[in-house]
Each structure stands twice: as structure tokens, then as C-alpha cells.
Image 1 (tube, rainbow, N blue to C red):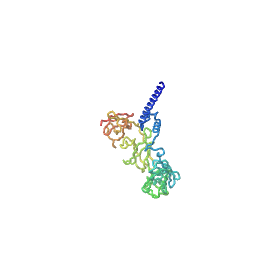
Image 2 (cartoon, rainbow, N blue to C red):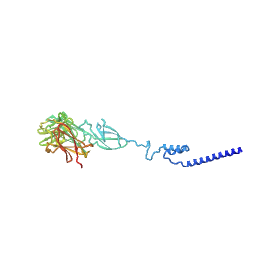
Image 3 (cartoon, rainbow, N blue to C red):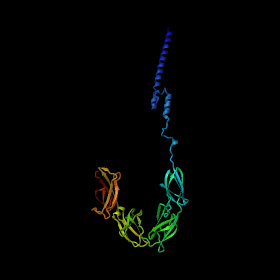
Length: 418
């Protein structure tokens, strides 16, 4: 009896085990049918990681492996910057300055030159004499346009035969130095001219000329034509006179001052002073009376306002001196413009100079300077002690007459609403 109960219990356990096994199998089968075929991320695989290790591995592989897009290129397909080089030779051989676009180099004594790192395509080149060869016309005919290919390019520039001419200036058998002589020559559609001065022996050599006629002009002789070779003497009918001098402010050279020279009430020359404050006029005939006036700046010169003058009677072959020194000081007139409490940028402002407090005009018209306000509405003018000025925005006067004396000024103007 006990034995039969034991057997029945064993069958019961086995049956339960089989039922559990079947249930587990069904459950596993249903889970396997719910596994997605596409995954947006590895997180979606977490519930079935243990059961589907192979799927997990495959998913990891698909995420890690990068596939290039159709518009992406690998390193082997990347574009490299392609450059050109240009080497050439100038004939006849000589040292020249060669310009290629915005770059320049010098050829050697054999006329050879080279450029590296140029961009392929159209390139303009030209040939000029070196700076020390002030009287050389070799650049005529050296200009051309090239089409550069990637890599190396070669060019030959044939300037043709280049000749020279020496001019010798004298007056009554005495050499004349520092005489300015102009030589011009036409070749095809190009015309070149250059002005050079004679040396202490009255000589000046023009080089780099083409075969043919050159035109020579200067002071004290009639313009003439000459073959571009050999020596040519020039006998002057008279010696030129010059006016030279300097402009300063309290002993300090003034760069940019304007010097006006008049003869018989007509303007015959206008010069601007260099960095050292100096100027030199064109040559004049002896015996002329010249009235020289120096102005601090162009605006004052145009209005004939506030200048210093000197009268000179010119003598033959003499450089006459005219020195000017203004006892004054420049002052800055700074200011700002606003509208409705906001800075006004780009406002066009004018500052006019008045003769006195009556604001009357000067004979040549009231001189005017211009300024434009910056992004913060600020502007600046320059005036000198003793000036009476008025500032305008268009036709609108800003404030009253301003008297300039001893100090810089800072002003603020409120513009009318538009």
C-alpha cells in the first residue's frame, strides 16, 4: 500500500514538472515573438538581454559601425590646394622689378625671376626698372596677361632692344645742374614719360628707350625731338629760378600745409609740404615777381583764409627761400550727437570758419571741414586759437558760434526729431 502511494506521488511530481516545463516553453516562445526587428537604442534590448545574447551582440555591432554618407568622402578623396609657380627670363637680360598680380620680385643680372605659390588662372605681369634706376623706361611693353596652369609655368618677356640717350644742359657754356628735364616716348599704344634732374656736370642719362623718336622738354629751351641714342647737348636760353622753403608751427615742421604761388594775380603753382615741412616750386623765368602764401590746410587755402605771405623778385639761376612759422596751436573740437537720448551714427557734420562774431563770409567763400559721427555718435574737428566756427548738421546750425582759444573743446548736441 505504501509502495503504491509512493509511486502515485512520484507520478504527480513528474506531472507537475512537465506542466511547469510546458508553461515555461510557451512563455519563452511568446517572448521570442515580441522581440523587435529594429532598434533605436540599446536600451530597448535590456528586457531580453540574457535570453538573446546574440541579438545584443548584433545590435552593438550595428551601433558601433559607421557607414559614410553618400555626400561624405574619405581622406583619399579630399581636395588638396593646388598652386602654380612661374619662372621666366627677360630679354635683353638685366635686373628688373617684375610684378605678378599684387606680388613683386627682382630679376637677377641674367633677367631670370621666379614666383611660387600662385593661384592657377589669369595673371597680369609687368616689368619696371629698379627704383635706383630713376631714368629708365624699360617697363614699356613688358605688360602681359598669362593663363597659369597648376604646377610649373614658364614665360619669356622680350622687351626688344633698349637704347639710351644722354642730355647735357648748359647756359653760356656753363653746365646747369638740378635742371628738370622731361623725356617721353611712344611705342605702339603705350606712352611713357619720365622727369629727371641733371647732375653737377649738367648731364642726365635716360635709359631703356626703344628705337625711334623721343620728345624732350624742360625749362629754358624749346621742346624738341631726338633719336634715342647718343649724346645730345642742350643750350639753355636762360637759367630757371625756384622758390623753396618750409612751413612750421611754433618751430615744428608742418606736414600737409599748402603753399600757393601767384604771378600777376594768377595762381601759377600749388605745393603741399612734405613730412619735414619743406616745399619746392616749379622753375620760373628770371625777373618775375612771385607772391607766395602758406596755409595750414587745404580748406583754408581754398578760401584764402588765415595764411602768411611773402613777395619775391626772382633772379636768374637762384633758389629763393620762403620760410613760414605760425605762432599758434591746434585745438580739437570733440563732440557727440544724439536724438531722443540715443547716439546718432553716420551723421554728416560741417564746421565752417567765420571771419568774426558776425559770421560774415570770406572773399573766397567760407572754408568748411567735414566729419561723420561714429557708431557712438562722436565726431572731431581741428581748429586753431582765434578761430570762430559754427557746426552744422546739414542745413541745421548746432548751437551758437564757437570761439576757439587755448583749450580743446568737448560739445554735446541734441538733434531735432525727424
